[in-house]
Structures are given as C-alpha cells and as structure tokens.
Length: 249
Length: 262
Image (cartoon, rainbow over the protein chains, first blue to last red):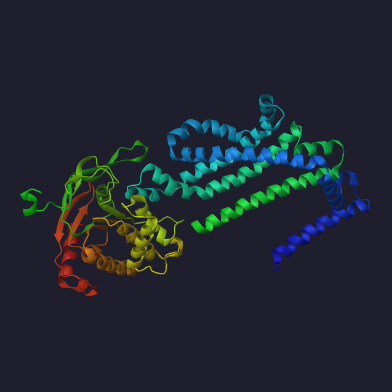
C-alpha cells in the first residue's frame, strides 16, 4: 500500500520529529523555547487530566459550533438569493465586498466592546469570519449555473421555486460546500484568536496563559489540538465535496 | 363543438404575423429575429424548419414553446394563444440541457417531476420514466450520469425526457446539431420510428437540408435579415423512410428546390 508519495511524506515527518527531539538533547537549541515531541506528549497527557481542560475545550467548541452554524444558516441562503436576484446583489455587493476586504480580526476590539469578553463575542467572531466565504461562494455557485438547465426546467412549466429547488440548489451545491470548507478554517482561527485577545475560558485562553508562563510544551499541545480539529473537520467537508463532484461532473 | 370545426379542423399550431425582437447587448439597438411570420401546422404532421444561422428558426420554435415572448403577433395552440410553456408542448434542446447531477432515469423523470400529472405517485413517475428510457434504447444505462454517455445517447435522454410528459407537440431545436454525421442519420431514423408510433405533431429545426427532407411532411424554408419564411414545401415521400429514400429522384428534386431558396 505504501506508494512513493506517502513514503517520502512519512520520512519527511519522521525526520522533522527526530531533529526536533534530538536537537535540544544535543545542546544545539534550548528546549525551553523549542520544546520536544516527547515533552509535548507528556504535557498533553497532563493537560487532559486537569479539571479545567474539558471546560476549556467545550467552551471553544460551543463558540465555534454556534458561530459557524449561524454563518452557514445566514451565508448559504443569503448567498443563493443574492446570486439569483441581481438587484439585491447590486444593493448588497458594496458592503459585502467591504467586509470581505476587511481583515476580520481587526474587528475584534469593537466586537468585544459590543458583546463583552464572554462567549458571545467569540460566537460573533466565528460568525463574521465564516459567513463571508460561505456567502461569496454560494453566490458564485448560483451565478455559474448553466442557463440552459433553467430554460429546460421552464420548458416543463417550472415556477421560480421549482427552478430554485430542482436546478439552482443542486447545481450550486459543490460551490456551497467549498464555501463551507473555506469558512470553517476561518471560523476556527477566529475563535482561537478571539479567545487569545480577551476571554475567560477556551483553548485560545489556555494558549495565551501557557505562553505568558513560558510553558511551551503545554502551549504546543493546545496548538496541535486546534490544528488537528481544523484538519479533521476540513477533511470531512472535503470528502463530502469530492463525492458531490464525482456525482456531478 | 360548432359545425365549422367538424368540417374544417383548425390547425394544431397557428402562427399569426409573429415578430420576435432581441435587444442587442450594450444598447446597440434591436435585432429582428423573426419578422411577420405566418404558419399553420396540422395535427399529427412532422414539420421541419430549415435555414441558415440567424434566420430566426430557433426563435420561431421557442416562441411556440412559450419560452420567447413575441414583440407582436401571436402563437395559438388548439386555438388558444400561447403565453408560457404548457403541458401540451415539450422541447428537445440542441445542447441536450441535461442535469449533470442526475442519472439517465432521473433526467427523464425531470419533466414529470415538474409537471406532476394528476394522481401519479413518485413510483409511477419512475416507472413511466423507465418506459421512455427503454423506448429510446437506453435500457441498461438508467443509472449512468450524462458525462458517461456519448452525444447521441445524451440526446436520446433529451428526447425521452420530452416524450415522457406525453405532450401533444414535440418541439426539437436542432437536436442533432452537435452530433457527428453518422450518429445524426441514425438518430433521425430512430426519431421517425418513435414518431410513427403515435404521430404527435412535431416541429424540428435544423440547418441540414437532407435531414429536413428525410424527416418531414412539410418543410418550412426560412431566410435571414430579417428572419422570414421564403417557401413551404410539402414532401411527398412514402413512409417509413429508409436510407434508400435519400437516393430517390424526388428526394434530390426537393434538395434542389430548397437550395434555390437559401
């Protein structure tokens, strides 16, 4: 089963871990700054057993889940509608493009001013971060729908709603899922950074605390946890996407 | 029912001084695609419309379909003015217009789903779609996706989709235009074989002269600038038609007549 590509990738990863482990041991770098794979694992085992860990994870996860669900619930329908009705697009395009161009994390201070340092502000950041790529891609998906499919539907007396359900929706689904995948990683980033900026709990809050205490092992374990979560979720969406593409094209 | 209709049945399709105008992009004025066209089509006849690109033949067909709004004049089907697509008409498109995410059977089911004939369940629709898949010779390909089929097979799906809703009138807009010559001939013969079973009124747009003669009871020849009818030829060739038909003296004579008008 091992093909050339996986073999090379595996060797690269192993080599990196080996250098990371042995460079501090050989005295080339200071482990206080770089940590080591074994120390990260040890720190992880310790963190998992602490009382606050589950709380922090569940806070971060709920913030992400709520904000991202909200982003999908708003971004997908709004994007589809904007794609379908040019007049609405002309009205809303400037503000959407303005938000698109704004580095959304730069809005953090004002979001905290509005919503405080609790979960609400993190949910809002996850939403703002995630909603734009979702909306923009859903809109692009609708605009890319082949006009001949719509004409074919009309030739069978389809009403606007039928056209939407039977043509627009399935035709733009791959694009919608793509937007969800792009929005997902931005929402994860948004939650963690927002927690690092101002918060009372969450994985980002932990990362910030470990950083100020120079506990690199602990800090890196949390970072690893976040990237593992992002990777898994993104891969799941990508798998869904690929299934749709193979069915559709 | 008044006595007149019994004595002289009204044409199935009546086109009355139809004019179709398109706006040119970037406000460059308007384009008269069809200019003051009159045409009567009798029930159960196979009519082909032949002419060069831009002669308005597709616009004429799409107006009858109710997909293009005329600038003036009107189209009547069974005496009633057409304002939109209806259950009595179905269209076969040049680019097939199949949904790539639907399988063959689901593409054939598409029109049925939209029209939902009274009293039919989802299962009935699938069963009916299945019959039409078989009719066009695609049995065994029900669960293929369009991209897995050849051009000819895709258009069979397009034809099955149109027939499945059991329309009175079949409107075919250069259906074999993107197929290679040999496939086009095969498809023409098969289309005739299917048509001869129930003799629906058929209107077939093409720019192929031989195709126009081979299929037709009546050929409408059109010219461009502006799009208008220059000649209507009644084709007196025996049915069923075969490859030999195209070699007959009369066939060659029709070909010459059409060439003269183009």
